[in-house]
Every structure is written in structure tokens, then in C-alpha cells.
Length: 115
Length: 115
Image (tube, rainbow over all chains, first blue to last red; front, side, top):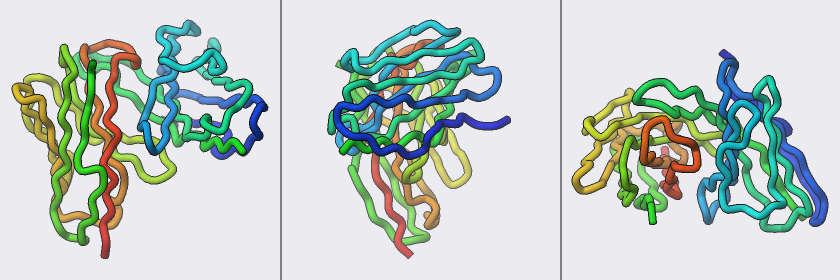
């Protein structure tokens, strides 16, 4: 099976712009989660989608939004970019099974640099 | 507040040596604990997952231990190789089948293997 793919892999934007990142989960996985990873904070949960519905949302401002399509592909959008939004954005897909449920498979990430 | 603390923050060892990474958590309730390996610029990859009733799990040269009473876990790497250079992240889940928002991530240990 192909793994989780994320596009683009690298992105440079200017403060005030907006950006859209894309994630394609593993075939058959219906849950997609997004994380922001910075050197100082580690991985921080942004939001999770399941069957096109946002199931959970982390403690991020409303500038961060996302959606999931019927084929389980997901996008996240950040509007009015700030320097502090520079980070590696990771997407993870999952298919809960039994006790070892919620095994997450991460994509390679999108490295966003805001100048 | 649920927390996962990892130590050391960074570690440098010579190729062929063994090392042990630590993870202490205060997550409650507890369902399972995972160790991930994250190569630079890539997404995390799962190494091991342990539930409450398991106290050791191996994956090749990686052996994870769990003491649910003291809420401590360790990841032991045997006969280190240059390819082990990466960040190692400890993640604790409070309940099985739960969503991504329930996961608590440690900030990771950055391991460098020198030839």
C-alpha cells in the first residue's frame, strides 16, 4: 500500500499570505489528523477529520482550518500567515483496529517557511 | 494536566554502542504508549506500542520497556548504527479507540550516532 502523501513538501510564503496544504491518506483510512511540529514545542495537535467531519480541534487560532473530502483526502489552510507559523506540518492517517487502535501513519510533512 | 517528559533532550554516542532513552508520563487514564522514530525532515515512524499489561516489546535492535506503576518507559537501542541518528518521540494515549486529540506527545530525544 502506498503511504501517506503530502504536497507540497516545501513552501515559502510571506507574512499575511495564506497557504493550503494537502494530504492523501493510506487507501482505506478514513481518519486524518494534522499536527504542527516546531523545535521548541514538539508535535501539537491541530485537528482531526473522520468521514468528512471535524472530530476534534486543538488549541490553535481560527486562522487554521481544514476540511476532508469524500475520498478521505484532506486539506488544511492557514490564513494571514505569521512568522510563528513556520513549522513542519504533519498529516497522519489511521484505521482503528482492536486494542492497538488508533495506530497513526504519518506523511513526510510539509515544511512551511514564513518570511 | 497530562504530560510526557523525555530525557535526555539530546544524546551523542559512538557507533556500535548501546543507549537508553527515557519517557516519564502523567497521563491518566492510560491505554497505550508508543515510541516513534523521526528522521530529519521526515514524518515519525512507529517503532513499538505497548498496552498497560505489557512491560517489554522488541523491534529488531530496539527494545521498549514499560512500568505502568511508576509511569515510566524506556527505549533501549543495541549496537547503534549511523542510521539510528534521529529524534525519538514517546506518545501516550489515555484510551483505546480514542481520537488524536487525546494523544500526549513528548518533545523527543535527538540522538546522534558518530562513526
